Length: 188
Image (cartoon, helix red, strand yellow):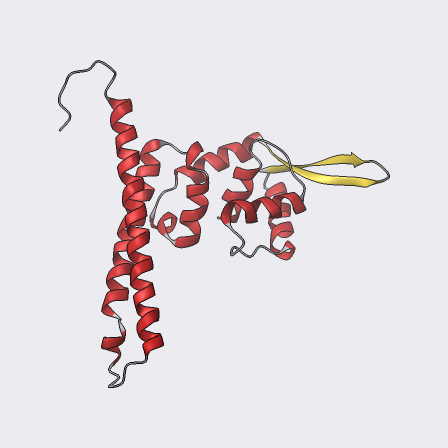
């Protein structure tokens, strides 16, 4: 997923490592810990594979700064990563990265990822409900455990409502594109 994020962020402009790390945090949120010890080895690997190239940019009064740009092979690889929409794309971190680049993703792939994510969230909600504090076997109920469980259920329900709205919007957009204006055929 890190490679997808790097390639996606470098599609329109080249960046140096500090800028790239900052953009990853801006797009995916600060909870996605990305250390320089993780970023720079991955950048080096992507340069070695031919997905990125290093560009020396002069900086007045200092040594040149290395920036990274996507190669044509990197663009092809990015496209292949965008279209890989299997079960791994439905998990938390992978979903967030895929979702960040939905604007560049084919509509059918977006819908497949959203539907897979929905199924994953339904499973999660079922598990949270099934593993509630009443199931723990404790004769005494700790109010904090009960509240934590309630929060888990509410969070899972909110995520499920959100993903359902996203699927409905995606299907509505798809229906508008699939049925030309002025077409009087019934949509069933």
